[in-house]
Each structure stands twice: as C-alpha cells, then as structure tokens.
Image (tube, rainbow, N blue to C red; front, top):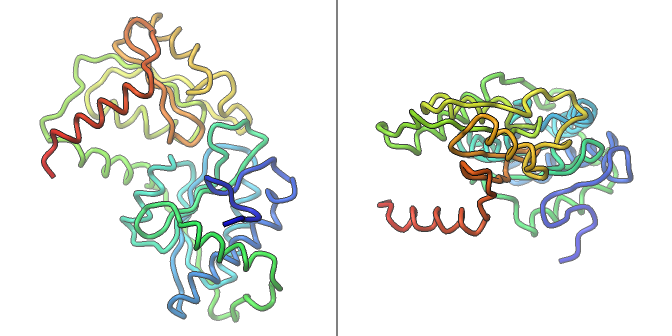
Length: 278
C-alpha cells in the first residue's frame, strides 16, 4: 500500500519542507479529525504530546487548529515520551493520540506518530484513509462555528504516565542501593525518566535534561552513547541508560561502561515475560 505522506513510522522530514510545515499540519489535523468524526457523526477526542524541538511551537498550534476545525476536542500534554502518549491515549479513552517528534533525528527535523484508542499505532489502512483527505478541499471539512472542538492543556501528563509505569511493578519493588546514570538526550523524557527511577529508590545522575529547542539528540542520548559511558565511569554507577529524543529508544551500558547489546535486553525481557503470570 503506497502512501504519499506516511512512512514506516508516521510522518517525518525537515521542518518547513514540503510536508513538515504549518499548512500541512493544519491539513493533517483537519483530515484526521474529519476521519474520526465521520465514524460516529459526533465530536471525538484527540490528545497531543511532543518532544522538545523548537519547531514544536509552530507545528502544534497548526495541528490543534486543524483538529478543532474538524470538530474534535483536544488535550495538549506538552513534552512527554512517546510511550506515555500511547498509554494515556488508551487510559483517557481518546480516539486519537498524536506525538509530534522526529525521534532520534536532529532538531531541524520533525514529524508525527499516530496512535489509536487501544494505544497502538494506527494501521496502514487508516493512515491511507486519512491521507486521502489531506489534499482535498478544506472547506468541505470545516465544522460549523458552534460545532468547533475545544482545546485544553493538561499539566499532569508526566505524572499520570509515571503512575501507569509504577503500577507495573510489585509494591515491594525497589532500586534502593543502585546508582544510575540517565541520559535523556535533552528530549521528551527529561522530566519523567529521572523522576520515576528516583521514586523507585535509585540514586540518579541525570544528564541531557536541559533542552533548549536545538540540542535534542546533539552529542548525547542513545545515538551518542560515549557521554553515557564516560559518566558511568566517572560516577562509578551500576548502570547507564540513554534515551533518544522521544524516549521510545534505549541504549544501556554496564558498570564497566560496556554497551549492552539490544538483543541481550530483548532476551532478558522475553525471559521475564515467560516467568510472569498474567
């Protein structure tokens, strides 16, 4: 199924290019809102989160405007990991979750990742239907004035995400006695990652937690693990954890600053799931 805008993981590209600009984000919001509105012929709910890129301040309002113009209600969450956006989409029973991010790319890129009410990525079939609406006549999809969507900013997105994560651990679980270095890549996880690890009892040395809109993924995070390795050795930590810009990718190193292969991490998780009683 060939698609014009969507790739394997949402939409991504250089800011103010052909598809990553205010006009296209308005059109995308209007198209997505129209698709979901037509399912039940009434207002639907979308939630939006983003990473820390400067361009988020220009793209988010355009996206919100398009969704509201189609008649969708919107909750904006501000900087929040992609995983948190997916989990909160399900918890809040929203019809659509949209993450504004270009993941591990540099600040000059941006894009979108889309999630359905089950917290999973939208299917190719639904993305294609939304695509078919993007380039159609805007006027055909605008809601009447009294049917426009409402917009509300929620400030507790990270706290709600942390609650969901902590509920996955036994009440007796503790990281007390462990020293961890966490590199948040100056990205979406700069608040939640250090906070949850601290609340679980670990001593946390946080780096990459001073985003300025331009330094996301810049010589830090999972794409530049040298910083992580150096700090694990410097602080004599037990483990190093590095995230990418939207905090859905992780790189780890052990107490000797040796990178832990991703296959090893997957194997450990698989063994844990095998033992777990659902």
